[in-house]
Each structure stands twice: as C-alpha cells, then as structure tokens.
Length: 263
Image (cartoon, rainbow, N blue to C red; front, side):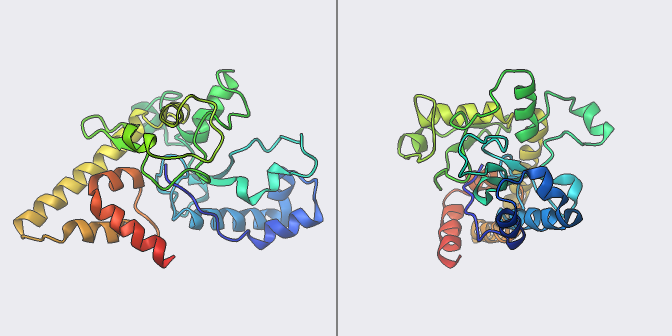
C-alpha cells in the first residue's frame, strides 16, 4: 500500500453534490446513465497511477477489474454537514479483490481465502468479524506517510511490517492500536494482502526482477537499477509498487524523490 495524494475533485461529482447535498452513492451512480460515475472512477484510477489503493495490482482499463471503495462508510449520516458518500476525499479506486475471477482462477485460488482488499474486508464485515466502520483499524492510504512501512519476504512473497520505519514514522490518521507497527500488521490481515493469489503475483515480480538483474550483469549494465526505477515508476505505474520499491532499494527512493519534485 502506498500513499495516495488526491488531485482536484472531478467536476461531475462536485456538480451532483451541489444539486443533491443529501444524495446517496446509488443516485450518483445512476446520474446521466452512469456517465458521471465512470468519469469519477477514471479520475480516481489515474490519480492512483493505475494501481489498486490496497493491494497495488494493476486496475487496467476494463470496468470489470475496478470499482470505487469508500474508506469511511458511505452510510454514515451522523454529521448532517458531512456526506461521506459523495466526498471525493473518501473515494478510492480498488480492484475486484478476486471476487470476479474466472472459474479456473477460483479452482486454483479458492475463495474466501483468496479474496483481498475491500472484497475481503466486506467478507469480514458480513461474518461480523469486523465493524462496518473500521477506520482506525487499518491504514488509510489517503493519510499514510510516504515512508515504506512494509517489507517484502523474498521467500514467501508476503508483505511484512517494517518495524524500523514504523518506529521512526508519525502516522497522522486514526489508530486504535497501540503502535503504528500493529496498525500495519492489522492492515495486512484485514485486507488479506498475504493471500496466496497475491503472494504468487508478487513472487513473479521478484523472479522477473532477478532475470533482468542477471541479464544486466552479463552485459555489464551498471545502470540497471536506475533504469528499472524509471520504467516502473512512470504513469501508469507497474503493479505491486511496494514489492518493486523494496527490491530496488536506494534506486527506488531516489526515483520517488525525483517524481515528487517534478509532480
């Protein structure tokens, strides 16, 4: 999971909210026969460099591979002045979390064990193992720091807690746990980011990286890390940002600083 910096609110959402201050998400989705919704989703996907806000898989361009997630429950009407359903700062573009994979994929990666992201979060809510309002129980990618709070296990493909980064980082969001490290750990569990489906995909990224590094050594290409950083962290970004960031180390951090300066 990486930090997401929202760009300017899309005009269709702003106009709909102005005309329907108490409107709900379902009403917005039907606005102009879905044209407004599609425009907002496209902006959210572009805003996130084409990656799911949670697992960082590629969202592609097909509508069947992406949807909008409300980080704070859109049903919350406790504050009359706040409509969470139509709040641009509450919207995330996410993948389908394995919920609509082909049957062959479900045979290889059975559900619900291989659901992820908001699909798995929804599963936990339905099983009453997680409250609907889970803000403070997992990282908010709209608030999280730019530091890499995760480590990548090259043997298993798992995401793990970067204890050192967590200890040195101040998180500005809500945290109902005793520490940032515990919040990161619970985020991994709540979104099921270490399901076998995602671990296998991250391991494939590492295997491809190893092949390219081996080839670079054979050709004495000493600039390979900088080249990969530039290739991976340019719009749209390559899938599994955190894995690639961990593999490239210093080269990734230098490229990300360059990106932040130029953006």
